[in-house]
View 1 (cartoon, one colour):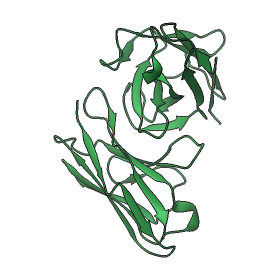
View 2 (tube, chains in turn red, yellow):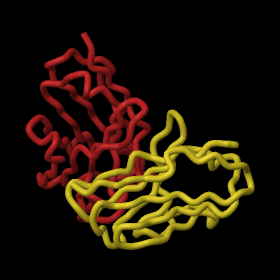
View 3 (cartoon, rainbow over the protein chains, first blue to last red):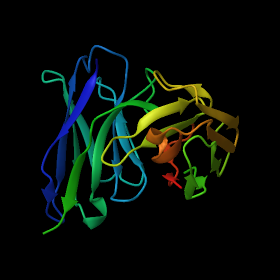
View 4 (cartoon, each protein chain N blue to C red):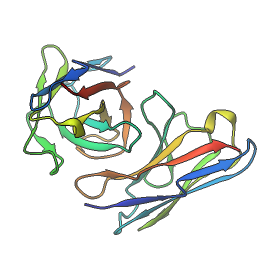
Length: 123
Length: 107
């Protein structure tokens, strides 16, 4: 059974870079034709798609965050990572890694989610 | 970006009643519309994709309908575990986007 697990610091200083990792178990990132993505949810608010990537290197980012986001993969560890630079309090949110339900689609209905990790931006 | 507007913001019903939740898109999304359920402290769970197809393991009391700009999620007979927040999502346009949510609470 495929499972996703986010990890990373729960507190980040303003203007610094937020870094999170998603570990995939029960399946291989590079052994399938699925994209893998990040979605976030500020406290008490709705969901926002951050971006998705394919293990070969193709990435798609939300234009609202594109200048600050990098998603990368470490296939040897079966992990993918999110980096968000120049963070402010507005980036405080629960960050989820998730997988679209259909192959070869960067944006789709997301059927597998990690449990989420809360990141607070504060000094 | 396509904007999704969900209504009502809060819906107060009793177990056993029928729930009807609405999602309206700012432009046509064809049938590229999904519904999610989210309980406190949990990740969203996919209920419906393609506007009307139930995801794996979702009870048949959940049904989705609509196309174009107007969509409905119906829960035929509410169970205690159905009280949660529900989100719609469109994935025809980039970036994909989510509605602001409808909170389904016990009356």
